[in-house]
Length: 155
Image 1: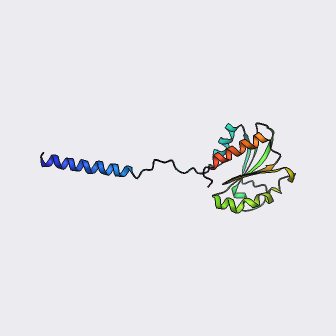
Image 2 (image 1 turned 45 degrees about the vertical axis):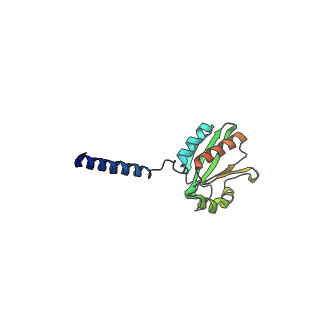
Image 3 (image 1 turned 180 degrees about the vertical axis):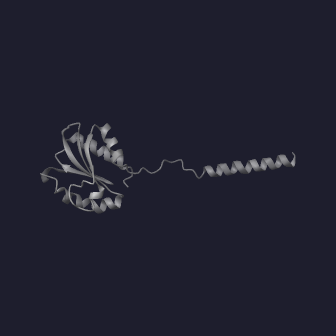
């Protein structure tokens, strides 16, 4: 073997070794699931049979300055919920923010709920949905499934 050929073999070995070592730095596991935004959530509600309309960002249903930036109000109907219901969705930045604000939703809801006995609230970090009920059982179950799917690892 000539010295040039030996050098080429060493260089090739170093390059291939470097490439293989670099492969160990690439993760083969999927990234952690992060919560989806409202558009993504609406796209999860649709296949569940829930139709969303009249969307208003920043509509908390009350004047709580901490909830207004997190809120999106919309009308929803579908499945066994023939009459549209106004739903207030609160999307929090992370689980800690969700925990801090979740107890303030019923107080805020007092501004838009006409019958406290049938008030509905579903929680799935980082989301909370609230509205006047009663909600039909199939509708509520589909809403829960979409929130669970959209939540990823919960923020």
